[in-house]
Amino acid sequence: MFFNYRFYLSWIIAAVFMYGAFYVWHGVFLNDLNQISFSKSLFLVLAALVYLVISFILYRTYESKFLQKNISQALLRGVVSGFLIGFILFSIVTVLGISFTKNINFTYILADFGWQISEQIIGGLVIGFGKLFIFEPILD
Image (cartoon, rainbow, N blue to C red; front, side, top):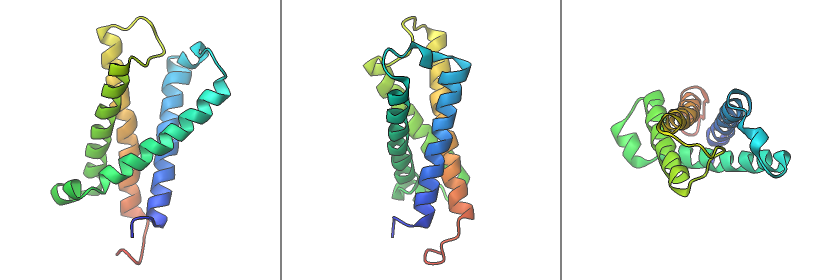
């Protein structure tokens, strides 16, 4: 069964880690969150919901038959699934022009690309660790 203790724990912890990484990058390092023109609290709540969705998609990608068949190592599969989802998210956000800054240059795009990939790889690794360390007697 797909929805089990391992799924819920890995899904939520991965979302929390990715959200934390997002907040450190945009709220502390770049200080982008101060440029939001509406309620910061509302933005952070909506961002948390978005990270729950991203984490769910990341988990489903991690558990896909294609990746299970081709990558047996749990952590490597987490890195690959994180890279794939990070690349897709970066592509969507870039094409739609969603950004905190108006002055987008090549350096900004490269930094944003690297961070987006890193953020999702963190989530993929959390899911991989969950797969390795959360014991589900029904599955094992």
